[in-house]
Length: 235
Image (tube, rainbow, N blue to C red):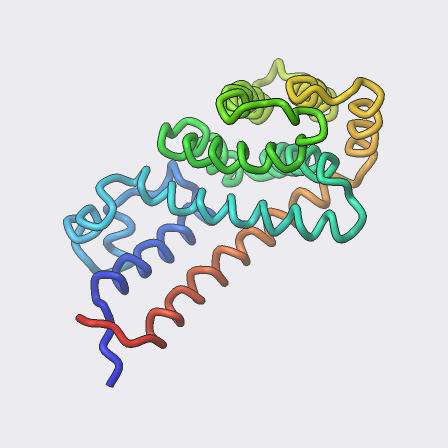
């Protein structure tokens, strides 16, 4: 007889519902009270597993990082160089944020959260070691870590817009030039990669990738539930 770990089952269900609400209603618009109503459980039960809403957001950011790795693999299979794939990612995120207020709220909230920012930096640091190894072969782990502190700040500034902000293309091109410079990518290569990114149909691609991320989150949380119910565990 299969016996399910009820605590793990509850955690999985909380993550599933919270992720859905954050990506469809907005992180800022979602409260623990609203989650408790949808889940049919007390707020105390939710905060027992996730002390704050920020802890739930961190779970979703972990899914985003896994999705980014998958996206990088797919894009390199399709002929994109790893550097170009990383450049394209920032353009698509910025484009999605410009076209979708819910996406913008999610990404900006993630960069404002110390817990989420730690996850983003750690993930991007590992990718940078792989993507920029040709130009930073003599770098230490500490140097990559310091670089990602700078890069995450540039990314956040790129996604933060106001009525005075420059056009998306110009904003992202400037950000990418600075980021690639940090990783010692030569000027001619920087210009080539940035030109190619700005020539893509980034607005359409940005919305498509956002849709794919939402689908990825749904699939991931459903698979986690399936795996949990398919294995024997102690209550």
